[in-house]
Image 1 (cartoon, rainbow, N blue to C red):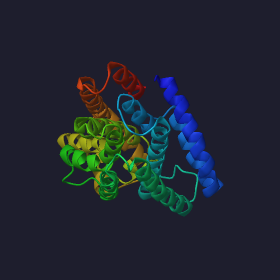
Image 2: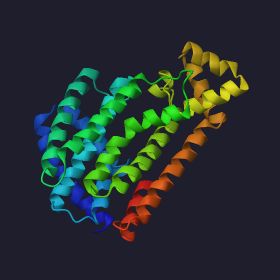
Image 3: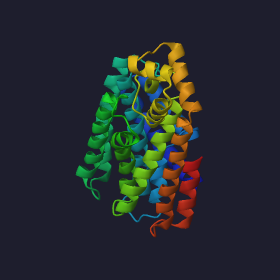
Image 4: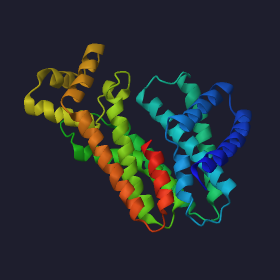
Length: 301
């Protein structure tokens, strides 16, 4: 099955899902979710499709329609987790009242978890699925309280960040390769780290995002703080110390992180984690050359 077949079958499953989804949720929320799903079909990563790529070589008892139903639920889960993350961080990028978004997102989240467990109950350990989801929630809790401090360091960042981003990606890889721990544990961890680093590098340059406004303990911020301390850059250190969030100060922080090389450092680290993940896939005997090539091409787009 080539990539176009995956797109075609996934599209059928998505259309079927949306026809039922529209019956049970208000149109404002339906439109929002549909917009996010549409973006995943064009310019954003769909981890549901990553699951389908990984499943190409796997001899599983579930049928192709079931695989596509699982893939759709995975994308829904990731969209909902992004919404909840935005609500917690106070990001104002979603054109829907916070309370309305929260109640609908939570409702759909519980429904989606139940459906995912039902679809996989005959061949996977439900407790494992719930473990990954619980770990992801714990990671969000750490992220909520995360802020720059005297103890901030790259080591602290990676330990906290992995708790937030890794479990959901591991869930995707576990569903596709439950018997291959090297894939669902190590490969997924490297990929999720790369994704998070890329995301942090982009968000730290956006003065409307919570990473800057809340002084989040991200890698670009942490490395810039290290540089500022070494060079005694008073303006940067003063803004951090007094949590100054006027427009000019936030713009300066973004400029400083780029100029001192913190953003470039973050992006280079992401590239290394991507390559490590691809190497694990390439060396794995259960992943064919064709699937490896398709998956790498999709992830690198």
